[in-house]
Length: 137
Image 1 (spheres, rainbow, N blue to C red):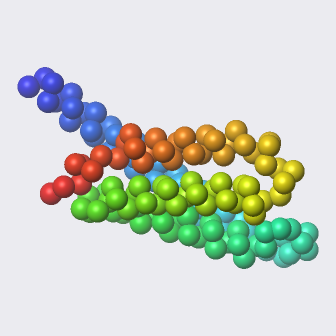
Image 2 (spheres, rainbow, N blue to C red):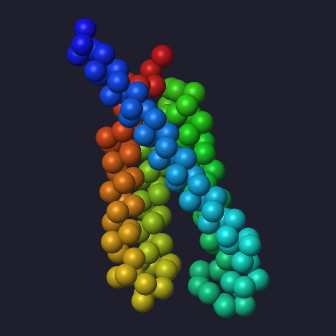
Image 3 (spheres, one colour):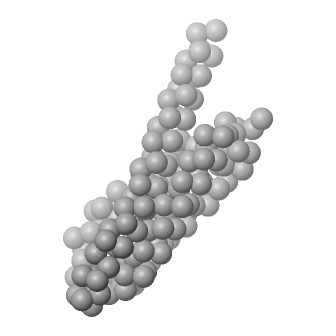
């Protein structure tokens, strides 16, 4: 049974790597919300686009969504894989819409490599690390 033991180790490693990424994505979302609230009046004074409300709401949505994904993942909820894939697709679509149409035009090219890295990591998390079979009871 050495092959079976190897598969279990790989599955366990994938499980904890996925949990780490969910925690990281949630932390990024909550930090976006927290920093928007800390610098609220400063951001208003700068008259930035998009408005700080957009930054706060999007940060809270990302934080809440990935916190929920982490809880589902740790509890091995039956529909976790479906939820995570839906959340990942939603994040990628939102990220590209944000970069192309909502964000400042001058920052698109300098932020393009970061946007591509985030997209690749999210696709990797959704397709390579998350296996539907791991959540069946």
